[in-house]
Image (cartoon, rainbow, N blue to C red; front, side):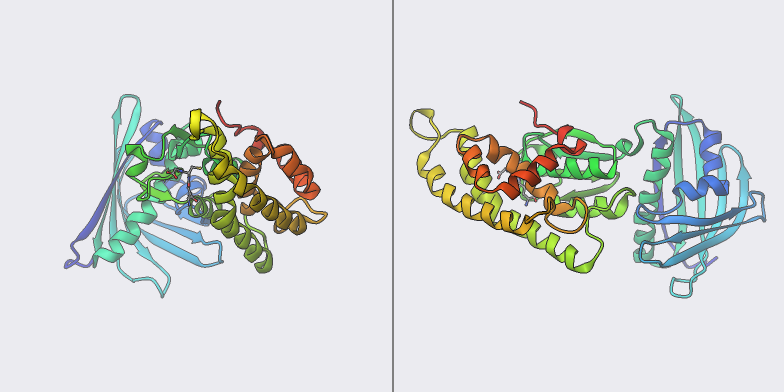
Length: 357
Ligand SMILES: N[C@@H](CCC(=O)N[C@@H](CS)C(=O)NCC(=O)O)C(=O)O
């Protein structure tokens, strides 16, 4: 142990399970494999000999194929209340420093309070990297014991009527990630606490907070198993990004801000929709839809061989456009778009995220 090391981190969690089960999750290889790595990684190998002087090892595998192995020696093994063990990375590229982990488990109101201290870091940077890693790992531990699953950690802040909120909800549904939705408006204090530009949606996964739909879904894509929301090859991924960017930069403005919203929240004379805003938007929307029509051709997807972020961004917007007074006419002029949208409408992720009225 490096005696000059002074940096440590402490993490706490309340886990809906008896202490014995939580304790065993730390020292049983089959259980360690299920959670002892940050989200987005897996644990292909784990071993444990939980008695003082016994060794453990855990190998984490990243999506890019990088493997990191941590190993150490148990110092104290007092099931179900206390576990002390050393922790040292085995890879030459990682700092070769032996650190110490203490796990204390106490019973409270039928749940287990976990307090984990990881000490002995030579610098704050290494401590902070471990803090992020352990937080992401403990999220997975909590979810294992919580019948809410990922919803124990994952929260989406937004409004089901918002197209961007729906895009994230569809992405979460496509990936099979369970979550809680906290209904909140763009200017609400809850959203402002996460989103510096006061828009919805905002997102939390444990201590991680994110804003911007694209960033949220890219995190969801990498952090959780399930079907990929990004095409498998570089050309299609770039095309997907191209459409997401275009939808954000041009289409949302014309289709939602200058067309759908003036109908839904009329601000014209006598409380009527403001034609001076809507009318100039219409030819622009027609031109944009024609671009999508050409892009679809005979396919129902904008990029790649399965539903991608591009489709998830567009579908909620088109759903609103089609429901507006000129919507039928706009959509009839673009049969490929209409067909692709009809296919999206059939997906459970679309059906299960209908906006509240
Ligand atoms: N670039 C943001 C856009 C989010 C956005 O504009 N959301 C709309 C609701 S769909 C909003 O919050 N509007 C409120 C406003 O513009 O003040 C994202 O991708 O998440």
